[in-house]
Amino acid sequence: IDRMTIQKGYSLLRPAKTMRAWVTDIEGINKPCSLDFRFAVAMQGSLGIGGDLTKYSDEDLEICRKNIAFYKTFRDIVQFGDLYRILDIEKDEVLLNQYVTADKSKSVAFLLANGTRFYKKRMPVRFDGLDNCRNYRLTIDGKTYEKSGAYLMNCGIILQIRGVDYNRVIIIEEIE
Image (spheres, helix red, strand yellow):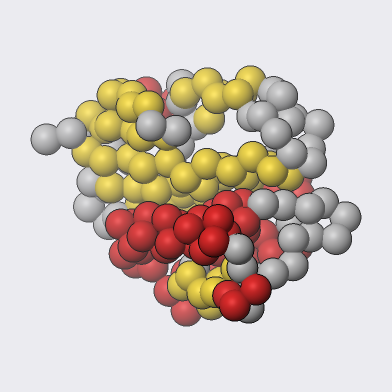
């Protein structure tokens, strides 16, 4: 949770591509979080691994491989896109940061909650920075939605936040 606040402060002054966002061995003191959660937080900058990989289990190493490969598919959007801070972890108890390419054709959004009262809440998730007149394909949890930019920004999609370290990386791409 502290890392999300640190990254927010950093992003107010500098671009994401200059932020070294580390996945560390520390799982959180008061609010433990999974390795996937720590990756979802760190993917919002220049992803780095700060943990001792020689102490990781085979399962943890596979989680690292999977997340690094996934990050590489959208790294350019995070590092060179425009950042929209939609929900604030301190104020809203849920973090939603969205990065959008300059031409508004691609976007990646990070939805995170850790130990909040919203751990079982259904909520509309609205996006920003898209083109009202274009149609987009949104992918989350292996499901796809096809909606207009206007719909995604004004109505959004309803998501169920479950678990104590809820984390989703949402890919949005223009349908041509």
